[in-house]
Length: 475
Image 1 (tube, rainbow, N blue to C red):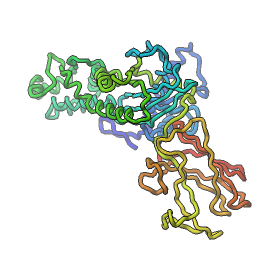
Image 2 (image 1 turned 135 degrees about the horizontal axis):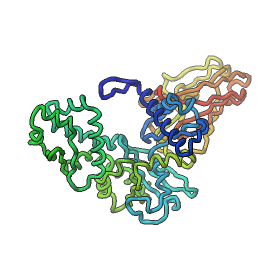
Image 3 (image 1 turned 90 degrees about the horizontal axis):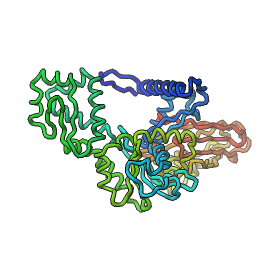
Image 4 (image 1 turned 120 degrees about the vertical axis):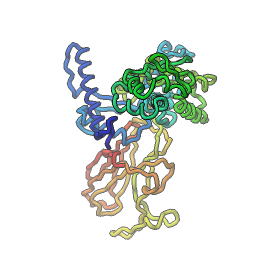
């Protein structure tokens, strides 16, 4: 996959992500060294935590592991020295141990969340790119139980920035804005950063955005700059500044707010969400007063709405807590249905005739390509539990068995070639001792619920086993 830069040049995505991680890795090591009086850390002692949006696909999470290898954080794909943390979960871990004083909006109770077993709350992680929404319940041991599968979308703060940029293109028409974007990218970055601060602090007053030197110069090469604003609604030229009205500023948020409020209403309207009492707003975008006001207006009559003091740091600080104790998330709700490809005895009443095949050894009739469900969509999965499954070879003289893993959004699929089915990966287990024929046992141990999917297949007779390295990138 190639990523295009603003100048039109491209680079492989893996290089872009890996070099970014490499820079941050070195920055982190330098910071630790300076803070610990130049003590040198042994890289083997470090566990790295990378946070990702919860709505990212398994392939995207696996991609981050590959980038971490390229960046030198870890040496192999299954290294336990790298933890992929889901951002709303990390933020939830941070917020649950905050005292009342740690929130901008006062809580109704002076207790910390983690001191109130049974309490349920919804976490809205408002980042730049994505909005992640999940629901948690505090357990007796302070651990977290997920109550609803993660949802969300690309409705983050960057959408507001894009709407602002489109408005400037509307103001500085006839190619003026496009020329500025192309010729002065560094200055544009400063302007957009200035706007990102303004969009969070904007309350019920007009916002003033500085019009930078080169934008003014490019615009005035066409006509006097105030003339660009004559037929524009929502903005006025004001002595070197662009004054944007509060109503116009609010309009930049409409798409994000509509989707966030709509998704929250959909989740909270479900009967199983009846005990939810709190809405936690975290992430940099949640510091926006316009966004918080909209959520208050929609939900404050029924729910307590809280935002931590350092909303933009909640994910990073929670990720450290998660790195120290990854088992603190007790269970998750599966976002998809997962299963393994198997063969079963053919039944003409229920099986597709095209999938029928006859064993060459004993003449028995089988159906191939059957999807055996391991966990269903929206099922609760305990993280620390390993599920065990027993299988047998189809042929008595079989010297290897291939386990292929699939996922789908369907609840009860029958075959692995149905529409929407994705092959996640596979492993082949040697079964050299054929003396027991079809009576041989193969054990499949599956661990769900972590941010990755791990499975180990073992031939009980020969004791040979293979751990599945799921290559999600093939999906």
